[in-house]
Length: 385
Image (tube, rainbow, N blue to C red; front, side, top):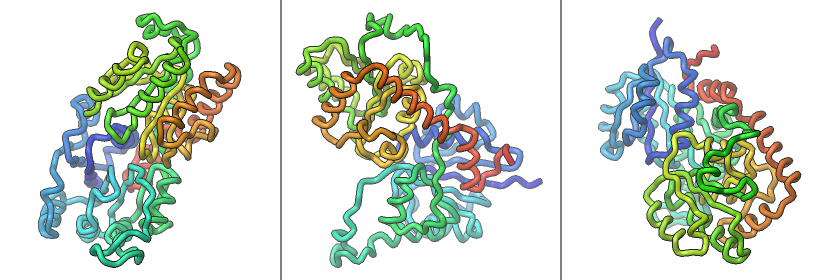
């Protein structure tokens, strides 16, 4: 039986959530019926991942080199694909020209993945060629891509609504497929020995806030540091801690910011960690301060781990956080108010919040169910069928 040859193109920078999503559904791919080639802007898949998925060809290419229709034609034709999937980190990573040529080469077997949330757009202020306001022609090249695509996978209902509202994506083509989360790996940890707390001499009664994130500007980690510093300074408290798990271009600047305030001894940078669940299970409150977030994989993992989660208002957070008291505006004062509120909640109420969050994740983000949904939408043969 001839294998289905699938070309997966990934543009954008290194986004951990996007990488986890891809690996989450490829784990259930039927490689006896599918040959997968992944071409990404950078070599974003570590050696252990490549060894695990030895059936996949991983390649690196700078898509900005492809400018003309002939260059795109030559590039895409060289892979002799039956199906082409455009996986976007940002809404305009791939131009309509590329999608249109793929549509011709693959006889319409073209799919798109929209991964990242985007801020609200004031359409009436947009101009076409910098001259005419309000007629919406600026969005047509983006909409054309959706017309060429057989189906479009997105990570949440909020993103689906935005794509349909702002970019006129056809409603019949946009499909929601949640992240395939291993809910057993990120589970409530009752009776843990708390080795990290013991190592740092942090009493079990102290409250540990945790952030798991890339340390880049759009993740808003600086807001959490400022709010947490004010919380300690104004409340004169030493029984609260902020753990920051992750790495990125802003780490040095964030460390300097943390050292300038009264909370310097209570803010700990852990760097990148392969097993974030270790840190989640020893924490009490998870913070997500992103400017934009379509899904928020770290948020889902924290909810599954039974943490109280406070998040800024993004498409992903607004969809999964059921108690709206834990959603805050994008400023330090709103975040500080939420921190004050949560550390003064009764323990029984906190327990109820944790159980409700865990139950929601288990119900909606089952790994196998969502992996199958992802594969089915993208036309990838799965082990389930």
